[in-house]
Image 1 (cartoon, helix red, strand yellow):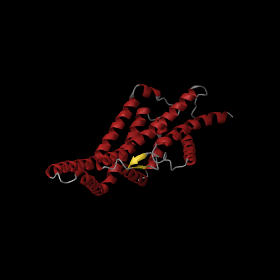
Image 2 (cartoon, one colour):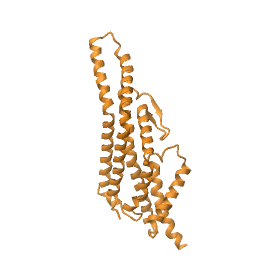
Image 3 (cartoon, helix red, strand yellow):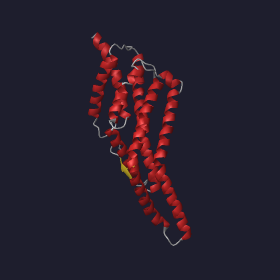
Image 4 (tube, helix red, strand yellow):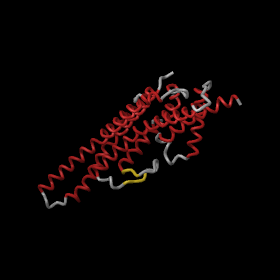
Length: 261
């Protein structure tokens, strides 16, 4: 019984962090992944983490244990949300393109999140997921949550980091940087479609007999799709850069929340 009183509380704390991570992080949090699979994977990884980092850890058996549960859930959510922010840059870039090309009125249901997303945004997000899986990015995510215990053990303290504003500053910077990345990814097509609008404006002034609204819709779709096709070979390198920034952001978050042991 004494052994169970030491092992079970530590294991449950580890399970809370990893489960909270899988609730938010891309790929694992999708609706197409069964809940039983998520719970089973969380349990297996929690067992591995306990055998690697949790043996010998002692946690309080009073109300302090509730605070540790809140801390572990918060750490898992922060790690998953940071990953989601960087991946959301792809959808944001696609949404900006959809607004210019005219596809923003035609949304589709994303099977991964269950939300309604624009066409180009959904296409680029699916392409980014394929590149992410092809480079074993999901393995790096598992590696990140497992070795987060090097920085933040189950008996660590992160509320002081939250109180001094370092975590809020990190999240604001990460959100701003993800939006800048989205603008940079969408900039070539948005600029080209803007110039197309300018050209249609000159056409409307010089040749009023043309129905610019009818011509403009088809022309912007053709120009946008042709440019997207021409830029497709460079998307892989762009996604590699984005994923590099993703893992760098996770490292910065771990450095912000705690010190490596």
